[in-house]
Image (cartoon, rainbow, N blue to C red; front, side, top):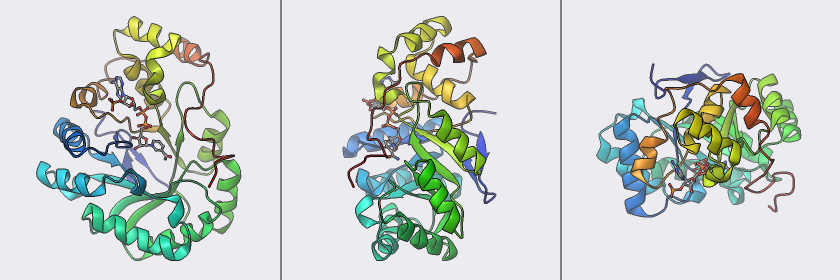
Length: 273
Ligand SMILES: NC(=O)c1ccc[n+]([C@@H]2O[C@H](COP(=O)([O-])OP(=O)(O)OC[C@H]3O[C@@H](n4cnc5c(N)ncnc54)[C@H](OP(=O)(O)O)[C@@H]3O)[C@@H](O)[C@H]2O)c1
């Protein structure tokens, strides 16, 4: 089975491909087109985007051009923070569908746990009931946000996408998600391109004759996380999918656990909404 066929089951019986393509900061028309076309040609079938990335329309065009069938694809988008009030979230779902030229979206996430997160969740639950979205989930939610949502949700979140990589292994949050039957998805798996500066990762890359990016992806893949590395360069999009021909040993995993902790993105516990 290739990495493109590997799927993880959600608590609502739907499946997500474990490996996909991130699209943050992919805003230049040619870059979007080249990166996504290279990905689809190689076999990627899972694309992660968000309202705030501003690339829905171009992604829709490239998918059309590729000829890949809708039912083969898994598309995630996210409701941006300013749209978390109930009314705005209802409209945002429709806008996402329109921009991506889709009848339904596979997965929509609340992008960050803003103070209006529960109103946003209600709008997402209704979007599921209306058949506009198959699955709904959360992003950058901490344990307390998960507990709060689990108490009131009619539909439980299927996934939590958060900054998660060898320099930010988030053990307790991962465990909390799993205890609540929520799939774990890593963003920034390549330490957002900084994996090339991390001694332990570079050493393991030499040992296996792989790139530091492939070591990080293998680490996350073996831990069972959904991964969505982004690159604007077609050759890297291809290269990033090539981590299925080796296995990190327990000793290697322990060595990666010695990487100095470093958060790259905003901290959800003091994010300025
Ligand atoms: N939910 C959230 O709040 C949130 C936040 C951030 C990201 N995300 C999602 O997660 C995805 C992945 O996270 P990310 O894009 O922040 O970080 P990432 O995938 O860890 O790293 C992307 C960076 O690494 C570089 N890169 C990619 N492949 C490489 C390779 N083989 N060799 C060297 N450099 C390489 C890219 O540059 P080039 O483009 O120049 O190759 C880019 O600068 C995003 O695209 C987005 O879809 C979600």
